[in-house]
Every structure is written in structure tokens, then in C-alpha cells.
Image (cartoon, rainbow, N blue to C red):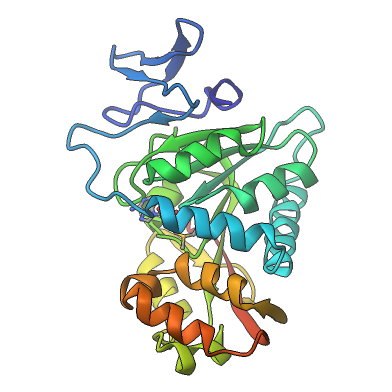
Length: 289
Ligand SMILES: C[S@@+](CC[C@H](N)C(=O)[O-])C[C@H]1O[C@@H](n2cnc3c(N)ncnc32)[C@H](O)[C@@H]1O
């Protein structure tokens, strides 16, 4: 619910504080800008230029929900939560604190809900540019506030107000992350590694993960963020049936490059069940100053 995180949100136009008015049907900033809260409970906080992207469509979000609810990515989810907990522990937060995790490109909120369930009194902001994602985020957990915003624009969040940022297969805006993080906060990034879904790539004709992704991310963050320790490889085998494979492909950008009929044919030609590798890397970044 937005009321849980209102103290952290800021006007996307000028960064002033927001408050909920008319029973939280609107958020109004100190400077007088007003943002309607949708009936479903999310709010769009975009600056004057509006949103330049629409993000994942309804079918991609539905496929993501189907795939993740099968528990296939559980080791990724556990690792992300463990890293968030470690960041909170290292920051020596007092018992009365209600630390804030902000997930950028949060999708259905599956990861964020797991983290909040595991960490007592933590609060979450789920940011996504997709309205379909925001509808899920608004109901995924009572301590999540769902916000439609563009990760490449000024984030609608106060300076130094967030204890951890999670970015799971989603866009990274290092300058904005450094601005909103508390001094002891960290960004926890999960990026796909070469070998991820390797057994599916040739039979389905989907492109591989680019090499050097993590190094490039670290280079792009220079001046704002720096890595903390070594990154961690998380790798495991999944047993996927054809339906799970269809939803895995449907939730990823690969779905956009292959005609649906061709994809369905290729999936039908796969064995009924397959062992498929999941392989991604967790990198933690902290503010430079
Ligand atoms: C690959 S999905 C990952 C979703 C979620 N983190 C997960 O792993 O389940 C990427 C998400 O980022 C969102 N997204 C893409 N571009 C964005 C942008 N510029 N600002 C905010 N969200 C964006 C998409 O709508 C989508 O929900």
C-alpha cells in the first residue's frame, strides 16, 4: 500500500515530499502537483514529459506470473533476499527501523514479496513502467507500494531514503541509484550469464546472453557506484515441461523476435520434460561517496 512508503516518495517533477489526500485517492506534493491513485492501488509518478516506454505487455506479465509461480527460479529469489538481509545487517539498522527495499523493473513483484515476507518490518517500493506490472505489484504484498515510473528518468524517490535497491533482469540507472541510496545502502543486481537457458537456445532459435555484461554494467556505473566484493554466480538445473518453457520464453524479450506459431511448433518438438540450466550473477554496488 502506498501509505507504507509515502515518507520515501517524492514529486517526480521537483523532488518535493508527497502526502496522501482524500483517503489516499491522490498524492499531492508540497509544490502542489497532484497524482491520482488508480482504483487498483498504484500511482503513476512521471515528470512533465510523461512516460517514454510502455514496458512489458499484458501477455508477458501473465507469462512471468505463470512461470515464477512454478517456483523454478527459487534459488535466485532466495539469493536476492539473503543479499538484502546482509545489507541491512551490515548497516546495523536499529530494531525500530522499517528498512526500505526499492525494486526497479519489479514486474509482478514476486521477488520483492519474498524479500518482505522474509525480513520483518521491511517495506518495499515496486517501480515498473508497465501498467500491467503495476496492477500485480499493488496487490502482491501489503507492505509494497506500486509506482509506475521510468527507470531512465528522475526517480520519484527522496535523496538518501532507500536501504537497498534490487534490479533483477531490469534497467539500471546508476546516477539515480546513488542519489536515492542511504550512505550504507547497496544496489543488488541480478544479470543473466552466458549459459542461462542454454539447452533451449538452439532448438527454439533464441539469442544468447551477451558476453561481458557485468563488466559493462560496472563501467557504466563508474562515478556513481562501485562494486562491493566479488560477484556471485548462482547456477542450478530446472526441470521444465513444455508449458513452463512456453511461459519462460513468453516473459522474455525473445518472445518478440519469433512468430508465435513458429515458437509453438518448436516448443511442441521438444521432449515432454527437459533439464534446463538457470545461470545468473549477483553483483552488489555501493555509493562512491
Ligand atoms: C525482464 S522483466 C523483470 C521483472 C522482474 N524483475 C522479475 O525478474 O520478475 C523487466 C521489467 O522491467 C520493466 N521495465 C522495462 N523498462 C523499464 C523502464 N524504463 N523503467 C521501469 N521499468 C522498466 C518491464 O516492464 C519489466 O516488468
